[in-house]
Image 1 (cartoon, rainbow, N blue to C red):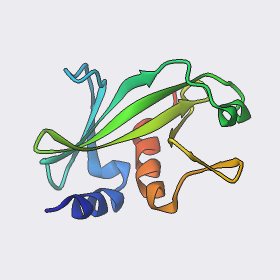
Image 2: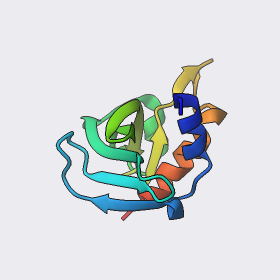
Image 3: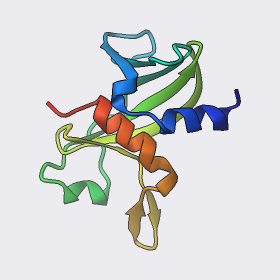
Length: 125
């Protein structure tokens, strides 16, 4: 399986397809989700990159509190790709890091399935 095939597999899943566990991992992450149909595939997340993350778009939320975190896509326990997400509004939302374009900030359509999965795996509260 190549990386593109792995992303396609992950992008076609919902949170019900994953076994989520919370515990301290050696990588600094606090959560691990293992794909139920293929336990070689997992997602580790929660390691904070920047506490008190601040960009202009963060102020659009009720609470300007935000942290950036790393989400690692893993195959057979090895990180094969990493994505930076931002936990905004006191942890109520988890979004892929948007990219500035024409004075606004955007998340590409290709990132939306994974973003939805991560939001569902990491519910607020």
